[in-house]
Image 1 (cartoon, rainbow, N blue to C red):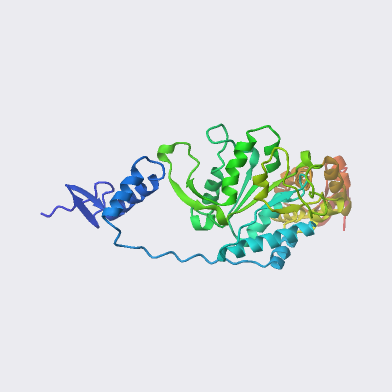
Image 2: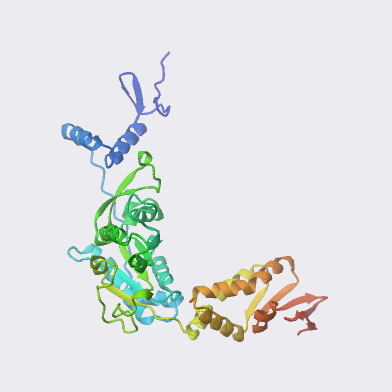
Length: 401
């Protein structure tokens, strides 16, 4: 009777290699080899042994080179047109960003052209993050958004700067080639100069990534080095976009005003080398009441349109009066929360409505008015015995059309 040889690791019976009574299948051999190559970046002696082995036994098989993924470079006018669909105002900022992104990805196929990373300034809620998110959606690249205040020098409490690349690698579906053309958005970069954290050490670590270097990137955020695997990633084609309000430096940050024409690389607490690696400067203007109204109503993903679609799932029509839209804009302006405060106000108006509507199939239409902000109740139109009945904001009932 012939004994079937099995892999001592996984039990497979195909492509078995036997050495000194130890049986291994091809899959396990290849996995072990890959593990050794990955461990060579941090395990003492492994790299030297691999180098010696390959010097004695050169590779006889060269795998085919991967076909580079096709990547469409959008023209500046195409980028701005797309941004216009989702972002109100900020015309100069959108134009500058469109040109910068076009040049960044165009230069990948041409050697000798340095990349130009971007620094965005603007008050809270002016749309800095939305601008970058919308851009990444259009050009279909992995995007990582991080807060500069969460980082610390290596070895201290807080996230390591290198974890940015780990997040980008994961966002890219664990594909290095995709991650190497992604976008890293670092918000609150101005907070590194406040003295509230180990700012200079973090800035030096960021500088290494931003200026372009080959980095051994952990594939996970595990803090256990024994189980850590790494991949090599070249950051020269990763677009870094930093942003902040720079409220503490308004008088010192020449050019961070409405003209956007002159800038300084001298900001107390931020090293000049870091600012020098962010040569493209974009300034977002504070939003006006008119901007707030347009943001609520006009973009393709406007928040009012989102709530209309949400309520429509329950078979109910939703309407906001013109007066209440103006009132919401005024409240957000007074609160000083910027565009992000719009959702908070509308969510407060919609909470009870969204609670009640699913339990009342007779509801056909809900109208939000300025009195809803006072009394907390909207106009509700519902069918009763074949007639349309309206309940107003004071809970009075009358027959509508």
